[in-house]
Image 1: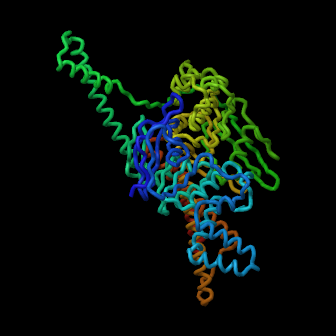
Image 2: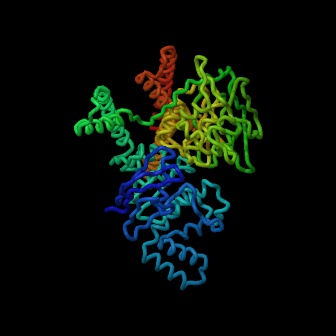
Amino acid sequence: MNLVSIENVHKSFGERVILHDISFGINKDQKIAFVAKNGTGKTTLLNIIAGKDSADIGQVVFRKGLKVAYLSQKMDLTLDLTVEESIFNADNPILKIIEAYEHALEHPEDSERYQKAFDEMELHHAWDFETQYKQILFKLKLENLHQKVSELSGGQQKRLGLAICLLMNPDLLILDEPTNHLDLEMIEWLETYLQKTKLTLFMVTHDRYFLERVCNDIVELDEGIIYRYTGNYSYFLEKKEARLAIEQATVDKAKNLYVKELDWMRRMPQARTTKSKSRIDAFYKTEEVAKSRRKEHQVQLEINMERLGSKVVELHKVSKSFGENTILKSFEYVFQREDRVGIIGNNGSGKSTLLNLITGSLKPDSGKIIIGDTVKMGYYTQEGIVIKPGQKVLEVIREFGEYIPLTKGRTLSAGSLLEKFLFDRKQQYDFVEKLSGGELKRLFLCTVLIQNPNFLILDEPTNDLDIITLNVLEDFLLDYPGTLVVVSHDRYFMDKIVDHLFVLKDGIVKDFPGNYSDYRDFEMFTEEQKREDKSEIASFAKASDEGNAKKVKLSYHEKKEFEQIEKDIAKLNLEKAKIESDFVEARIPEDQMYAMGKKLEEIIAQINQKEERWLDLSLKME
């Protein structure tokens, strides 16, 4: 069943054409991701479909009575309402019934009012919806229902907007970067929620794991043309690669024909017959195809950064609190050259605070931070840079540097750097006000890189970047020779870029050896072990009641040791698997193979030793 038809939509801003002759449809139960480069009109198209903007030409046709909910980049919330009032203000009659029931509970003396509200809850089966409504607010950490919207942070307002959209129970849900401002726990909850619910979904997201697991249809806008793929993100990548191969084969064939026809054109007699005129027209069409090329860009920068000395950055017993909220407790770590660290934790756990302590923009309450003499920091913050009115793109980057040194004595000018990051020469002279959110992020990234840092800190660099730019950034970071510290909720990005994680929780920083997927596997393993332990304890308790319990002879310290050994074995197995994978995939440099081989032997020996001790302890429990 077709819900929405987008028909020949065209949109321009001044001389800049954003959308040209865009047509496709959205059918019931489809979960569609819209994929395109930054600046090609993703948000504009979403605004047009949601009715927040209008097309210059063309139309959007909705099925009669269709209810649409739209999570935009900037939510239009009423600031003087509370969280609860904003929720109940949503367009869902069940919410009105729940609101009446909640108010009736506040006036227990009015039994008639309570009974009427209770009966309405029963009649409309609102109990399950009330449970769902409270679960959504809990998962999005919006428990303070009486807090004013004006008192919420930007991220909290975005989460409130998401909750309102979900609770509207719409026929069509439109989401613009829904994972921005969500921590990893929230993203994984939302991912599962959208997988299970029968919602028709049209969204823009850069989160490739989210896209892979939620969407079953992908609409791509590429070089002004719409392509449709019925499948998830992996299917899309496979079919797109095949399409590009066919396009390239067509161009190659046209080039061969063009050479032959060009020779004929040069030798062609002056008299132009109908036949020759037709051939001339065909020649110009062939020429157009032969000279066509995709606007693909790759960042391949061989930056000649200043060499890091033996001392990089050291944190010694660093503590930081804000009032009663403890962010760090005696944190110690010594950064190494070519360290690649990812930082994860729930919102408010102190990720950005830790970065600000490292850069010196925030002072610790106790402890000390030592910065090596050769360290040159580059800090990409969530706030971005302040743009002066009337500034042009090239002028912004030149304030931070005219060029960066490359290897072999070469240099890269500010303009060339911008071009490598997808700003063509014409766009470099555009006013910054014309840039989209993703293009502003790219520009900010260039201002950081042109300063040629050897210690690079990225705080949520993936927000608002399209998938193409993310691939470019990832390729650059994989070759980056300096020390790298990244905060990101993009799981795919973290898996690809970092070697180990700082996990922040309740002021404690745990150093986990592996990427995000390794960490999630470890957490799931630990949770499974806990469930098994609880089940085993329950079984022992039951057996004890029946007089058949087996005696447990472990001391308190042995029990603690037993629990710790299981964690150690899991961690060592992850390290072992990673090194073995590096050997199989030939990712280990030849000069490091012997050292890595020895390390693998040591890890295997530790595993054997700990498994023997685990067996000894487990036998005492029988």
